[in-house]
Image 1 (cartoon, rainbow, N blue to C red):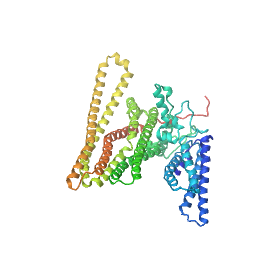
Image 2: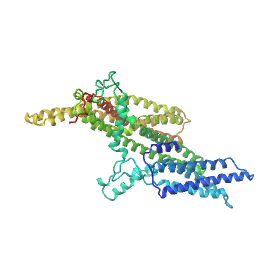
Image 3: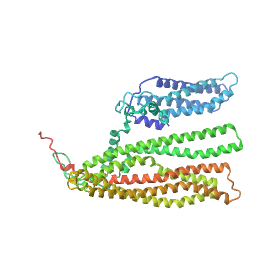
Image 4: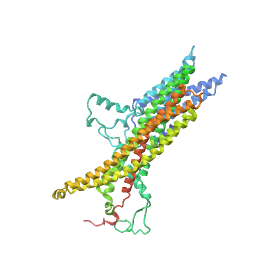
Length: 569
């Protein structure tokens, strides 16, 4: 965790966390732990020189602990200087030490029957100190004195919350209790976090867009600078190739996308871990092994489910927030582009299309963001489930695979048809919004010549065509969802039937049936989201393609106008 902590410290632009009770106590306890570890090393050295048998682990353990606690103290001080009020790395470090130390504490208490030894006394001081450090790291230090973020009247508590509160969404509890006591109003809501404000999102996107635009633009060889403005007189920017909006937003927020991908992978791994733990629990009940094994399996199953839930919720929250930031940046970019577009390009783009780009296509980012990583993690999870099912059911798994193979072409054809319908529906929508805008702008002429009924009929005709396409797409989506829902049941039925009939020795024992059903349930859950994931991803790619086409349109040539700044008006 140290490299991630160092990256977080070096990237921080805030400074000087004030000294308070929490960080002073943490620093003091860190020094106490360093002294205890050094004392343990000295005790082992004295015993060795006195001729007693001392194992190498008695030297290495306190030595490594001393260096580790010194590193923790350095990170604690560095966090305070660099303005980091809470540390996720230190919290996880003390949490792991507290959990691992329980086993040694039990051993020390059981083995110490007579007069307590020096090692026992040192550990009885060491372990409560570690637990106290964990408790102190649950709370956050006060915010730093120097910050690059503007001050707000009602800041979001997530910016000052501790790492534990961020993991468990504890910072949101105050708003829930406030809403429980009385109806919420606008005054009860917090301000946006700085990284979610339009000021930050727009500036970050425009910086990346301008950088890519500069790299994708070539200039003419003859550049005659004018004396008045210093700009090239014959400069013409010609993009080498159209710039993709999708590539720009992915490059702008690649760190967030990578973090979300890691959370999604961890969530899926924990989900796949539960069937294996279930198999171990069933085997333990049948064989009646040691009690501590059963407790360990049950605790592991609980922790896997909790980690799966927490990581999945953080992934969803992170991607929803990212989608909103994308929409904010794209709406600003489209609006500014509409002010700079040339007259020739304006003839091909109507006002209604620009409104749709800002209102509809930009909204696709919010809707698709949670399903962006699901497009590939679903396939990986399904393949892994099929692998484990092959190990459990053997050749009978091919029956389920055959049903899936039969359903895949149906879903592919349906998906292509839905994509075509969406493109046609968007064209009708652009046309409808265009005519409505023209009607509103020329309402006086329309009233003068009594053209209301004619335009109404024409607009309703376009709307009927649009509704017909939406109805067809909805029917296709419903059929895809129905096939996906039934596929898991058919796969389960076919696999179990073939497994029993293929060999008389094959018996559906509890460990086979329940574990296979657990994997099939995971597959059913992922397959149920597969049509929605495909649908949203298709809409997202279509929307980004439309926005990219508009953003690559020709702009006004501002270099054709020069100003003589030496003359005073």
